[in-house]
Length: 113
Image (cartoon, rainbow, N blue to C red; front, side, top):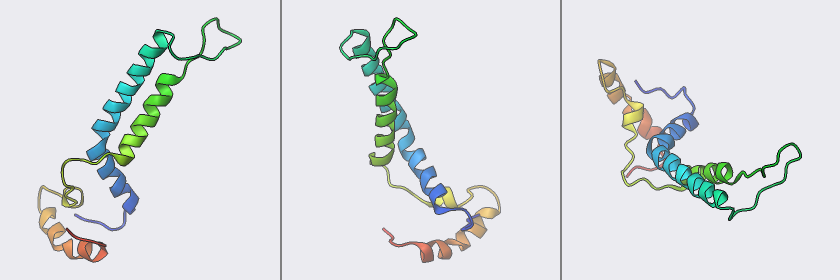
């Protein structure tokens, strides 16, 4: 059933991860892979470390994290978001109770398409 006790940020984060997560991780992985290839061909600079003979290069990690974060925030999914998928239990007798709770969902909504 639907509950307003949980924070709205948790529900929003769940929707963002559900709709943008796959694209964000895939593009972040691709960015990290490209940076790894550029580093392996010595096209990107590295940083000297006192303990090791090899140069330290953080290009793959940094670019992967940045691209993943940006895609997670700014990616526009091609499907419309149906909030009831998160808010209403789809199995059992709780579904009927949740449908009756839609009035509370509409009361708390700022806009409806």
